[in-house]
Image (tube, rainbow, N blue to C red; front, side, top):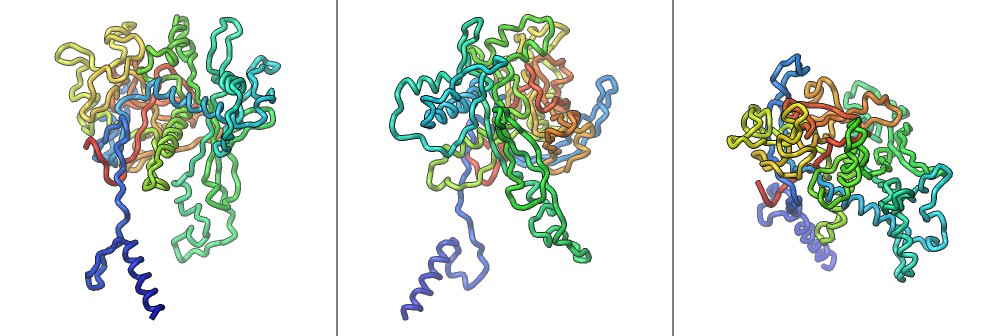
Length: 477
């Protein structure tokens, strides 16, 4: 009797866990998963799924346009309303800075270890910062005020000539890791040899050596950051787990290096750190740094998910938009739109410019701005997105190919190539879209594509993030 009661109890529990319907006479009803509505990401607009003709229909040898259009379909995704601003990117920098300080405060040896002093080596360069260990606990006892100040001041330096106190950009090292789901899903990389080939006429060699490329990063004995790609036999899922260390501080000297014989020192000294530029798009950020920001933003979101029902959830990461997503969003999903607005004029009916670009030879200020403008200074497109043309050109996740859409699929098209350090520099190009404040009208068209090298930093290239929409969403439709 007791055994029968236990069996009945187990059956009831299993039925309850599966949320299955009761009293249906043994019919197939399915097992539903718990419903979890993904919240609307702050500051983002939902771009609903759709299809459009990707690429320019113009054939213009003067501008080098020789590209056919391709009909493609795009899944729904969230996109930042504006470019990432200096203030938002500075939050990332300060997170890295505070994490370094936190790490040093948790080290018992910090108070008497000269390793953490900002001293100079033989070449006059500051000593490198240690890589963060996120799992080390902070001691419960409060440290002396002297040690706290020392830890805080260790991430700053004083200019030896001007005496200016500044954040030490050489220490702003960010270490992040990611799992390559795409590579791990390919049949040729299956851990079980029997799963690599579906053709039953082929005899699978269980001893076949499958090699895999893996990105890894570390600090060597000299304190130098080493990012390298290693090739080794496939052994486990950890071979698809990559690590990278990157300095994420933007290059403030781009204002000097991009423009020879120009007085742009005020931008170099003030643009990123002065509060007057808080709402201006961040520049001087490479594709690699923008990718690191997206990774941090994803981790930052995960850290905020303290609700019991959200723990362990698999969430869609923040990432750079694909080339197709950017063009689709810029054109408001309409084939006839060459610009983010609904006509081919560059000015409104009231003779106001519709974007921040170079409207005339040498006259950058004709549209009201000399360099970049505050984000959202111009009207949004029909999707509610600002500055999809002009202001700053924007990084995409897509690796650059001359053939463009022809080399991609027609569903969520993307060509991705994670170039290793050993690869030729010529193949380390990423697609840049949207045009910038320094470009003529032709180059801010939504259907125009350009490229830049992934480690290059420019005064006219910024970025914004996207997230693929999953399941139910609240907010703007």
